[in-house]
Image (cartoon, rainbow, N blue to C red; front, side):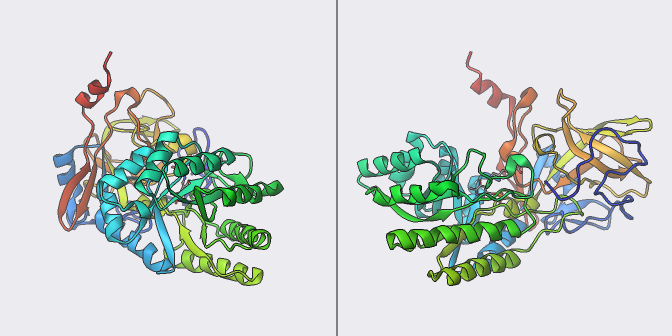
Length: 463
Ligand code: LLP
């Protein structure tokens, strides 16, 4: 996950987790710009604001826990990616990170395209007015219904993930009297430096068609023969929360190698390369993510250089950032409940949410930061573990962090960088009600995804 190491097991309070600052931050009231959305600031009276609105007011109006999303920051990040890649490339926001109709409209405004990976995401995108030709449809096991819908509405591309799917999509397109634009997702054999569950370019896994053993070349051969398909390019996604650009470099090199082989064998120069998403963000002060313009420069240079070597026309590049756009734009606001100091170990701070609104810590050993946001404090730092209210000891939100020792029930604390893969992976475990997403901008807050209610739970329970 983040580059910081992952401490395991209980520790004595004076032993600091590896990879974390060797001492508590000098000022616990300070908000590190790296991990907070761009409009987040602390006012003179100590209360934190986002988009010009105090978190105390937001808690009163919308309750806790809540995801507070800085719309200005989202738009700025989307625009930065769009501008960095310019008119000769496409940016597909990966909807799996977080998708709602408001987000679709912002993306549309800012000139981004959208990557969806299910019928549900496709429906959300279309219902908010994203033109179908700006949508890419992904997935390793798309259903026949999903493929039919995608072809019928005219999605810009379907990313083919298996030999069976090449035939399936071709047949469906043909039966609907269409020729579907497609890319083939390949696995280039790169071991991305990230958590095993979110690394996707090594060969022993469910996504894509391996380059190894000529399988990707065979997939191209088959796709080119089928009337229902217009093969426009090759896709590679090497994993997620990656900081090191060398994996992308190797991937680009190998994808261009395949384009060259395709040109040599078929006399066809495929016009597109998609290098996927996966760029890391700062979850703690220890992480140093790259800016979109650096990433764009690095990726376009690699592809141009490799194409020049292979004497190929440079294809149109596309990328699919999810986390890097939405991740830093939101934080989760919680109210502190029970505080339990464990002598010689650490203090457990329980909040009114937990693994149902952020499964990432339990699932990937992810690291997060936390701050007291309803007031400042000059009290000494205490080493805490922020935990949820679920019936499970692995229900941890922030493994190791410092909060002021005068923390009390009723205080508001916030966990930054929860915009990606938190609401989208939220669950109803223990019949928790999934929190709302509140977008804040220029002094105004509006709910873009409402809080679940007990009626919502009972509506599905039809026994
Ligand atoms: N494109 C493809 C084909 C993908 O599979 C993904 C993510 C992305 C783009 C966007 O990746 P991003 O830029 O957001 O890293 N639940 C995990 C992450 C799973 C990522 C799945 N695919 C997490 O919470 O870290």
